[in-house]
Image (cartoon, rainbow, N blue to C red; front, side):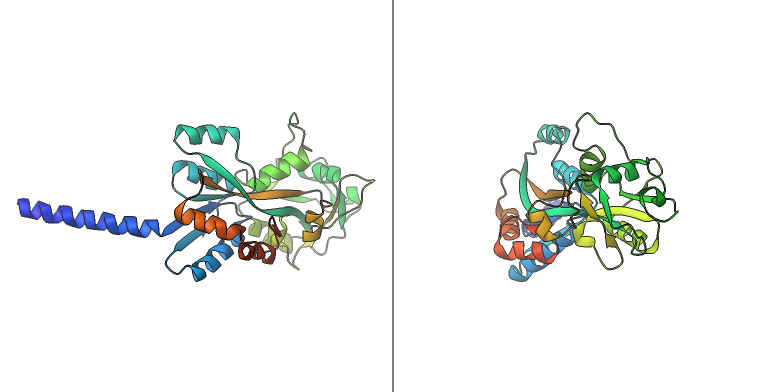
Length: 284
């Protein structure tokens, strides 16, 4: 009986050792849907160069990624917003020390169907549309059609950024919210697909999702300002008014495989991938 239990113990220890070894050579990256294509492109190129390492990248939203980092179920969180104070407090309670690393810049594109004659809007007009004060395209020079508002869901860093910087105009005391009739969609791709098929729709997402099936709208800070398109050049020079940094978060200063991957994202090769996926490099 003793020999039998000893054999079982040896098998369990061997399996645990094998799992630990495998785990040591793999990392989980999770979070922002805006960044998921970028993260996957990084992972593919990184694994080409480091055949023994494995990097798994999944989306779910910035909030989901940060929650996973805090719970210890991922190694790196991708986020299109800064971590919140309450998230930091919860993390510290669990012994997690969120470490913020800026890896790219992004412009949020406001898009309409290509058949929509509207081609430019001010930030105030955007706020009026997405809060529901303007409900028909004819009110701002378009067709006599009821506006279909598309937004990312509340767990998305893109949703949070758009609400704070467009609807609330960076006013911490503002309580503006998306119109109750706004459709909250689970991904940037879902918004892209809906805009492509709905002549009355308007939505927003990271400019890396722009395609010929949607028309990006030029945006001005106010009626006296120039209307600027969501392009890499306009994000770099600060002319496009809806721009933001993109982050990855680690538990403390990155070490081991996490450090290798983070270093790759910030390397020339990693930043070239940022540019190739229609984001703006932080290291040029």
